[in-house]
Image (cartoon, rainbow, N blue to C red; front, side, top):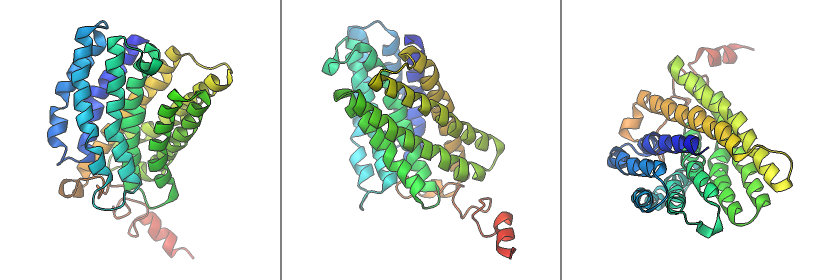
Length: 312
């Protein structure tokens, strides 16, 4: 399990986080995203070293970068007006790597932080790189790009809330963690449904649409596994082992959801001329899934809409 978890975390550190930072704010976070591989390499190397002083120092350097990133969360949350769901999701994304890095430092030092087993600390690292950073970020992007409605807003609020509840469940009991898993799963399924119904059809090429389809479909299975595991921990019913969860839920979320989502959204924002003018997620970007897009079914000039309006 250790090798697989290390591979997943390395992917998150070296690609997913800097790619996500460019989606949050290509202008304001450009320098951070460009320099991120430097501390990320140190954090990744620490994963493969034996526990001890060298691994702890490298992990601590990565943690310092994550804490600096978390310091930007308040400004993302309060951009001169009341924070909306997208802002809440982005602030959660910016803060999540700091939680992961704190767990990493403790695990590399062999320290049972708050009494948690080292295996639990090791699994906290990928969880808050993917369920924390990537899932919250994508929920915010989906909320901003989709047509106004309760589904996208629910996703942008419930993914951060579910992530926080899962974290609190670590300190309370398995039932609290199960409650967090239920909320998080509901939010992720809302992300998947909105992506499938609204974002995917507006992709300007087959590759983008395929990446969005995979990211949405994978969430249905991987989050069902998360519910199964959390329910088993709380009730004692048979459920997958942590090793099996890493090989299915963890790998599926890392490759099928996170990687495909980052690739797809980078293609979507590259297609959108507004993203270069006003890239902040708090005020955009308006993705090609926006109804103003001529290829979107909700656009009044789209053939499907025109047929509907002329049909008696």
